[in-house]
Amino acid sequence: MLPISVILIEDDPMIQQVNRQFIEKVNGFHVIGTAGNGIEGMKLVKQLKPDLVLMDIFMPEQNGMKTLQKLRESELNVDVITVTAATEMKTIRQILQLGVYDYIMKPFTFERMKQTLENYMHFKEKINRKKELTQVELDELIHPQYISIQEAKDLPKGLNGSTLDKIISYIKKQDMSISAEEVANGVGLARVTARRYLDYLEKQQKVVIDIQYGSVGRPVNQYRMIRGK
Picture 1 (cartoon, helix red, strand yellow):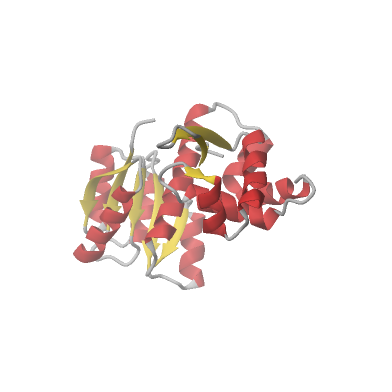
Picture 2 (picture 1 turned 120 degrees about the horizontal axis):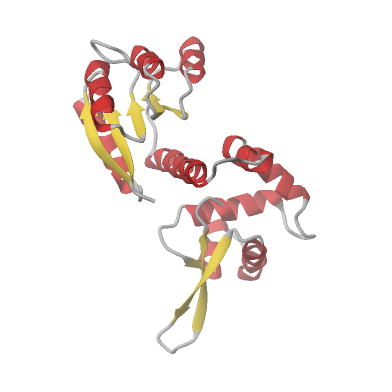
């Protein structure tokens, strides 16, 4: 899959720069243009045709709400994530009704941005790969927490849904494959317990094993999430 192209619309130059750095720290994303208001942003979207727009709401000349309305009226094939200090319920409802992929409130952490972008990449890969979706696949995109609850009901005896979620979340945050010992230390489990969860995830085809050889030639299993799982 090609890098996901992003246009960033933000009137504060310092915040714009921070957001750009955050976006480009996440593998698979590339900022192809920036704008300081909605009018400039609309021109860039029409010209460059990005996959994704990250946009503030409070901006001069043309605010994010108006820009989002114009994007939808223009039927441009672009997804939008709002990054804004707006916390009023009326504003939030209006923005959500205009079909944003996510709504991130300022101030936010890099981890929050990374989570959203990785989820969006999963979403993009799934819809690009499929012409049709089953109900389960659609639920996985729209309601991942529902899938998590269903999986917890079917876990083998001795495995806990909450612990499984922590392990999955921890592995997803890693840039490289990691060992069962690293997972155990990161989540706060005994190594043998972490290994049981990892074995389960491998059987469910949610992680793959990369075999690494140490200095003495002894193989060590390293685990990484299968993208989209």
